[in-house]
Amino acid sequence: MLKRLNLTLLSLLCVSLISVPPSRAESPEKGISAVDLVQLARNGYLQDQGIAQFNQLASDYDSGQICAEDVVEAAIADDRLSPETLTDDGYLATVDHCLDHLDD
Image (cartoon, rainbow, N blue to C red; front, side, top):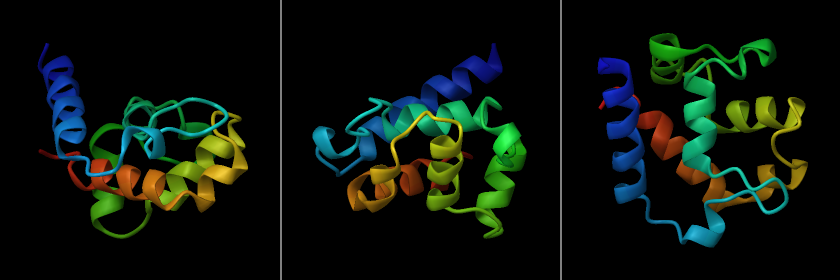
């Protein structure tokens, strides 16, 4: 119950604080929003690509071991995003923002 509440609060926080227009916060070809991507990573869907899950994801981000680009690259390797997403500064900024607020 607490994990679900945390994920819900994370989603609401990311959505409410994002200053990127909605069209820029979604990968153009694959349709995964930056918020959804961070949730997928947090829930372990990118573990095979080397992205930790749950609290370790936040710890790795806070310590500088991973960044938004790493998460996006992992999603590209897992065929969840198109390679062009790496050049979308708005998308990367939104992923970075959500990663920065994982512990909130």
